Length: 126
Image 1 (cartoon, rainbow, N blue to C red):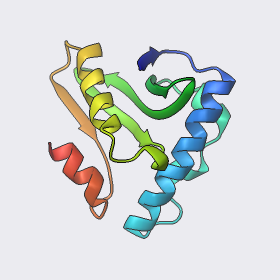
Image 2 (tube, helix red, strand yellow):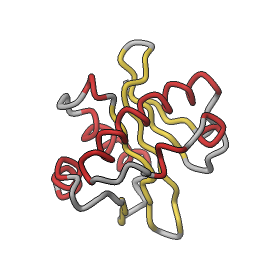
Image 3 (cartoon, rainbow, N blue to C red):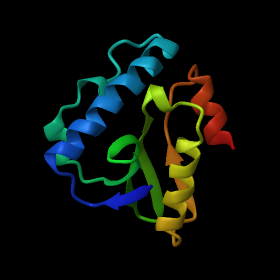
Image 4 (cartoon, rainbow, N blue to C red):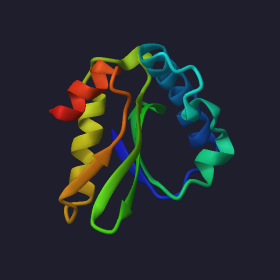
């Protein structure tokens, strides 16, 4: 189940951070950049983020999240993370589809990833 959240409580932020660290550690290894900025974020950073979050739950547990901001007429995706235990289940694709549904007025999306992160590059090209 995907839910949209404008405000993030501490428990939700802790779950997101746990997934974020696991997910971005894999990206850091793929792109050979161990000091990837998302690995330094804190629960407080997530709680005070100006971004809107979509969280994907498997029961009560968050296993994926996407965060974004709308800047002018562009939706900028700040993070797209999936728990490594839930890779290859279509969760990232569902989150991307959900953000397009949640913000139908937006016709341009931006997202950044490392050029050597082949799985993310393939997903974003789709």
